[in-house]
Image 1: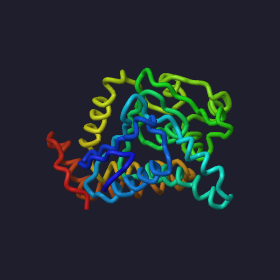
Image 2: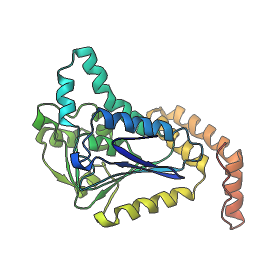
Image 3: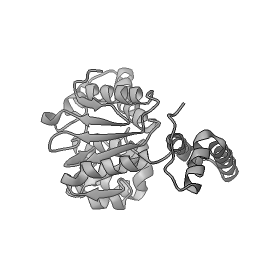
Length: 261
């Protein structure tokens, strides 16, 4: 596929790079459409094991493209809703990707960039990254991204950082649950590759099943959670991958993971 605002490299661990550095990788309707298309396409690759997302240039993502937002504000209400929905469509595509998505972000991570960070499974930040929910400075608010951001940071943090639009650092982002760890910017790509390599050691079907089950378990009541987890465990451990993994452990050898059917 050809992309204007992205670079996509396929492989067991796919690489998706925001490649609009002159605009600080700000997200326009083109960027959002390409990200959605890229992730929907990646989701169809049976042998895909993980996706790493990075940004080209000095910043990961400076937020939404202001010209796009201004044009969207001039649209009639129904067209405006469809236009704003582009952000949700992109975040759904990232969130619903069947394999782990690792975002490694550096420099400025503002507005919509924080939505992409929140939609990922694993979020890494350069230790000197600068983050900001900058929307209220522009007369709007962190809207669509909130469906992914709020479950990560909670209401108390939103009440502060949504309303002040103040800059905060990578350590604070980790403390509020928006990212899992920090590293020097120069080490960030290697750290993302190491995490991807750890994922490659695991049962492919097991990883995909675990990712799909986490939100279901989180939403379910106690009895439903027990039923879901019991049924899933029985299915996995009796399947070829589960049997191979358990046998490999007992035989003290590396598992021979078969390609996912």
